[in-house]
Image 1 (spheres, each protein chain N blue to C red):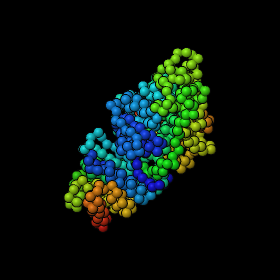
Image 2: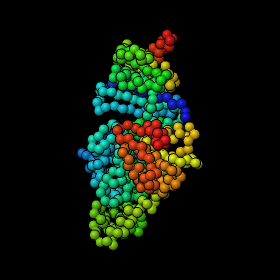
Image 3: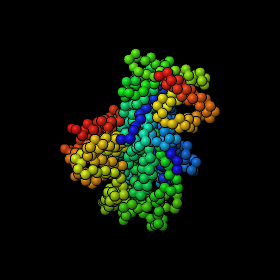
Image 4: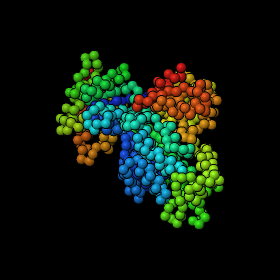
Length: 182
Length: 370
């Protein structure tokens, strides 16, 4: 079978994880010309509660459309971490928000202050999902940088393009630093 | 043509517009609401009408009325709303009014779980309304097919003067996938053509399987009722009028099965097992079958896009080719009952899951070994 990459983005309702999944899938399908599916799971609440968005990306046809065992998990809340940290496949990647998630000592995770960076870079913590996308793509190259930039710009509400561009950039920059340190 | 990422529900709404749907009445319900959202936004742009009704009973009545008035019409709903539509669905079947009903299945019974997936309404789609009646039920397996099968639903509905149910599920409805939309002007649309003059027109003529339907307000006057009726539509209890009607209406789909039954049969010489599926579960079946074939096993794969009328001849052929048919579905075994009726219980291995989660490829692979 063609190589299939599975990504699970999880957080609280309102953190924009579902939108982040849509943007990632658009980057893959619309701008990189790959196949992608995006699915989601959420409770009845508009805010709070657990929310997750899942993206499968492949060069070939995608049959089963949901994530089976994620290659990458992004957790922006403690609840999301608790629920999904264990689901990442052996050798996969776990990315957490350093300030919102306490990582158990035996768990290997890349800790990034996603929300703090969003606040510092754009003055708005709601851009944390865009920062997370920058970090995710910087670390995995699951889509091209150009594709994720185009996808973010296409989805950014009018007047917020610059803010979102900066947030994405901040995500890429922080993982470039992390990679150097590693 | 350009690629867009889109939800199945959005693709259904666009498919309806492409097919010429110009009237939508509905009551929003998760996980079908996006269909209504797109129709509310897009219908006024093409001169169509969108009405949010007080409930699903009225929604079904409104789309029947709209079609009698000459507009192709649709509604969309999920479990609880689909239950409320059953009475008027029977009326549409009895009065032979074309219309399309989308049911984005969620976990039931009752209010169940609005955001959880299910294929629990397979039997309800066939037998939810009382009395023997014809019905066509189609089930898409992707976002692209959500678009194309909606177009097919409208065309079959017009061609055979019958309600058509697009039976999809929360997975296909909410999933986003790339789709290349065709130019809507290239879409083939079936249109009713009435050649008889009003004086001799018979809306329920038994001389043909599907008499052409004249819209109201264009000089054709006739009666429409849910009672058994004669060839001009007035109630009758005369057996010499009722029996030809029964024979025509309950046989009209069967006599055109080749046109109505859509499925894909993918055979491998030497296979002893087949997997038969539909809807979102068909994607899982494909995943599992590819995995099995890559490991050297031979497996036949059958995907039903028309689930009612049930493609029994094709399934009989499938059964002749193998020793066992695995039927995975997100319910406690519904289409499996129909497969068992056709091929016998001993040949069928059910794989069921009715907790709101998708069946996984591993569950199908495991059924191979049993």
